[in-house]
View (tube, rainbow, N blue to C red):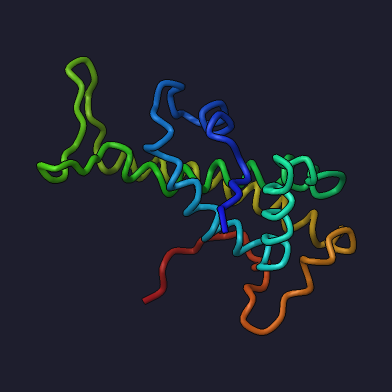
Length: 169
C-alpha cells in the first residue's frame, strides 16, 4: 500500500527553516518516518489508517469535514515539526559511492553539534505544543472521530502524553 503523506513538501518548506531550493528527496523520507513514528503514536492505528485511506482516495478529495479540519489544524503542524526533529541531525550528510560525506559550502560556516541539538530541541518543543493542542482537542471531541477509540488487540492505542522526557535506560 502506498504511504499517504499528511503534508506536502511545500508545507514543510513554507513552515520551517528548510530553504525552498532543498531537494525534496533529501527530506521526504524523514517526513514519512516522523509520520509513522510520532503521528501514528498520537492518532492510534485506526484513525491513522482512516486518514491515510481518505488522503489516497481521489487525490485527497475524500478527506472532508471534521477529518480535514483535524489534519489541517492539528496533525500537519505536529508533523512539520516532528519531521524537522528527525531530519535536522542528518541534513548535512550524504552517502555516495565514495562513502559518507558532510556537505560544506565555501561561503557558509558549518554548525556545531550543539547548535544542531539546539535546533532539534526547539522543533521538539514546538511539536510538543501542537501535540498537546491535538490531545486536548481530541479529549473533548473524540465522539467526532470514532476511530480514535476503536483500536483493539495489537493496534497502536493513542498516546495521551505529549512530552518527550528523554530515553530511560
